[in-house]
Image (tube, rainbow, N blue to C red):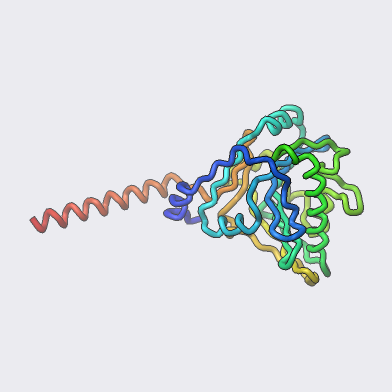
Length: 259
């Protein structure tokens, strides 16, 4: 992957998102939902409103300068301290209007299965309902912990309108292998940002878009979620500095020749 100067510029565009103000997640029912982070096991989950909507996020990723860092708050620290089993995580958002879309982080190898009719519309509606349940605990905070009996528990597997991520992913053909684990802890093995695309009336086959062409990824390490464009390799810095040094030498030589 060729990083070079574009990645140097990305370093200057870093946004550290420590504690966003308390607000429910926009569930996308009227379009342009908010991104939210989830981490869970079989006994509970934690969700956090990331404070950026889908349209703004897509625009940011398109610049190639994304660098969002979300440090652990007290609730996440508490959750990780008491849930030490097999954890999965993702970032999710939806837009249920017009150009219907469901955004989710996914392993690079994850592929969507072509399915008939308006399955993306169905998945978007289920995500909207899930966010409504999550918001039941977000009136006074931008994050919360949920037990398996709570409507905001991310991994609910019940039928009907109150479903969790496993049912949503199954509907759009996304296997459990797409979900993040604690091994996805660096850019190199980070998750891609993928969208299942539909429309209000449904499509015959699911389309998939990878935001940023795979050059922007999400990873989770030591309680910190990072969504960022590619980090420059050490040799890229060396090449840049060497090039600048050569330009300086040539400029000095020209001035010397004119004297």
